Length: 403
Image (cartoon, rainbow, N blue to C red; front, side, top):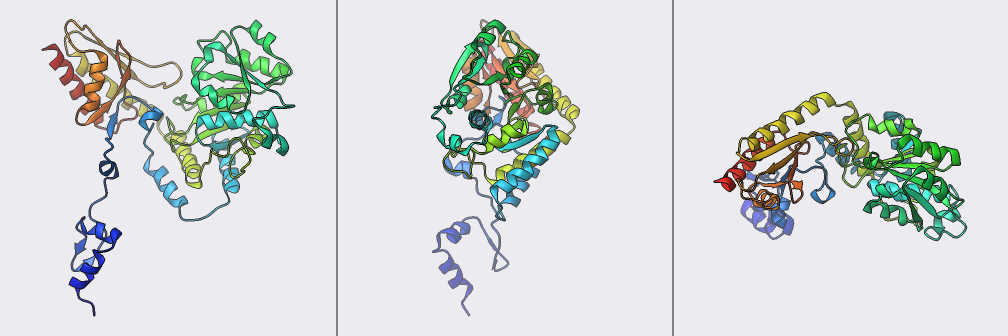
């Protein structure tokens, strides 16, 4: 029989097991599970931080609840047909959000591209393979100039030209036999002359599909069904923001025929504009569970927690002479209690940029947002208790700058 000493000597030569030896795995003369969990971010030299900013893609958006992580782990254990899973999950999501049909996409931008492609081609497979060549197809999408945003590049992926309008008169004039879709940015509803209902009215009048980009527009939870019920043919949400699903997932909701057409451009099909927008079985199942959790949670209790947290940081910052903290709630996108910090720089001698840098480079690192005039803070992506750390650190920096 091989001796314990020889066993350990032979195992230590193996890369994986040898790595485990460094974690102190010997217990009662036998090999046990590792006692220390690997800190991958630390190994890679990547700093983690407290998210006092919000659901920004650059900051990896949100953290998934344990139930979502469990669903993702569950999905790793078996093979399924990708289309079968999308069909069943799509039907379940449609029930949850009270619309005709739904599908999980590779984020909200993916939903925009797939929806545009589906509107252009319908269920015609030859046209699906033709995109972005629009020969013989409609070639324009109309949006309001005030809704212009970089993410609209997802529309242009399909080869279409975006036509910008400002007024109802402009819109009526711009519509032609080339018009494939009317695209709307929900977050800018109050910035444009043409509001939700009128945009839908025009679309229905001319039998042109209407699309509403609601990427960051939950909470409130009611928005998940508000806009399809209002009459938009297609609505898209990010999955990894307020819903707290996988960051690389999104939702496309709306009319069944249009979503089925959009699906023809998505994996597993290969010769399509959306081939690179793959959503794996783990993300699809994780997105469904995240949505179920989000809809069923106690939203009033969660809101009260955010108000408590933001008030704590408000009070800590406001205790420093010359600082003016203001609590506000954005009307549409990122509709959560938020804090704006401004101060008299003759009394507190630090700029907002310098403040953000000190927070980011401190220990622990804290990420915030804002501009040249202010520092912006939210708490809804924090872990419970982190608001105390943020409160202390903000007050400390402000006091140091005023001394």
